[in-house]
Image 1 (cartoon, rainbow, N blue to C red):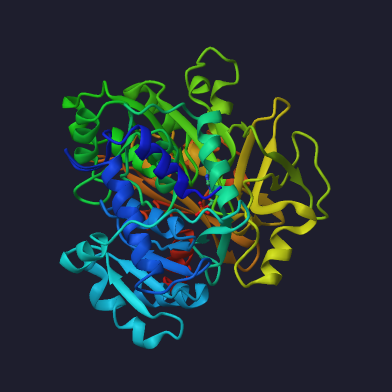
Image 2 (cartoon, rainbow, N blue to C red):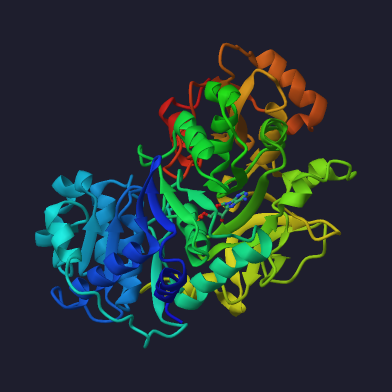
Length: 514
Ligand code: AMP
């Protein structure tokens, strides 16, 4: 089934419901959204001559036009290549070239840098600015019929990985993969009703976009903040405005929301669920968030390669405070999602029993088909029919998976494995610590030594001695950081993930002292 049918169907029976809103205002109902999308599909296949299977880049921050563009691409049987809007123009060019995109649809703010790429890149024929009079003229054309030749295994979305360890790779997601991701939200996170809302404060090219599919399927309102991104006060005002509000947040956004001065005056009755994931959520942070907002949280653990769907910690478990292992459960990424098999394996891909740590692997219909034009990487990642996530974790006897760290973030000091997450969890117990990130630094005798970057809570200071004492109280001596760096903020990417590579680079540039 073509994913675009979701929009066509919602428009037939919920045509009058709000579909797209910007800030406090409704912009489009479902009938209008579907019409615009089908007209743009007509322009893509008619005027621009794209053929089913051709790739179309989308480079837009969160804007009203995003959804109609995405669905127009599918409507015409094309493949969407959503690109993180914060990437450098050179990185965008690399992705467009790798995907052999024939067209890229951008927001006006990218025009200066991206329009010239049409002359530079072999495959790229046209850059369309997805706003303004010329764009509206494209949408004034006749809607075309949905391409219903699209089968479940046809490509729908090339999801480019963030590529922190090399060139980004395009995870090939089929219509079946996206349908599974859509359905799994209903199975494991929440049911959705037409009276609900999803507020897209996180990038639509990533988790928020996937959650958006489930909301569109059920006729809920998709709200894009006027700022196009995450601003705590603005997000709180939007929750006050829109009923049944759900949001997808990176863990760092949860932290910023609950620490916002605006939270005290906010009306949070509309808040249905904050779905968080994409990076580690620390126990102290989720406990603080539950104390402020109540147990309106669901965690998901996934990857672009298995969109949003490996394990999850449902809402009710966030409320299960009486459970003797409540803290451990909150520190975990939850249990396997309904439709996937998850296991933890050793280096020879042998399944390990509960309690042992190894690489997390997943198998199921939501898992990507492979990496675009990269057979070697596909064969390695999908060895033996299982997706090798590159994440290191451990199941407990009840099936809760706890992630340690990505293999590349593991610190090996004096031959012992040290998982930064464990030390970060301890540092965050200190009331004057707002954020912490731990990395390894080369050491002539030990191989690596532990260095902690710490952000103090507003108006507080914190010194190495007290942090050291805290670590000594909770973890083995050899895991203690050998140096503490007090910083104003941690480097993060557009999806809110801490860039440990940048922290390691900072240490290298400092000549390793401090
Ligand atoms: P991406 O493909 O950009 O979504 O990144 C996926 C990676 O983010 C995973 O392989 C994990 O390393 C990390 N990740 C995703 N969800 C979680 C989570 N709930 N807790 C900890 N790490 C996560």
